Image (cartoon, helix red, strand yellow):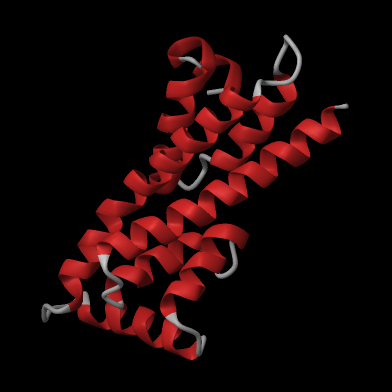
Length: 158
């Protein structure tokens, strides 16, 4: 599916929300590629500031809602015994080696992609980062990431 077919099927705003959520679940879908493509490919010229803000907010909302099921699943599994326990403990050890406050690591991951955002957001559930903190940290960092991507893409468009 191309950006054009997504936009034709659901529109710019719904597409930003849907791709934002799906990119959290399906590794081959990239919200970053989608956002850069819409910033570059707009036929009528650059998007208005309000359109860009709406796209950023919707893509960010999609990302938060896309990560919450994984966060809650890992959070629920973290305290339970079973075969999954070794995986949860491995994630906890990995995050502990970073020697930083978990929310700082989560914010850096959501903004920069290092460590990989999917790993850091999964680790957040295992480390019992409170749900509100999890949502606020990733929303702010992802919105900043998306704003930077769109700004750079629009600037390179000429």
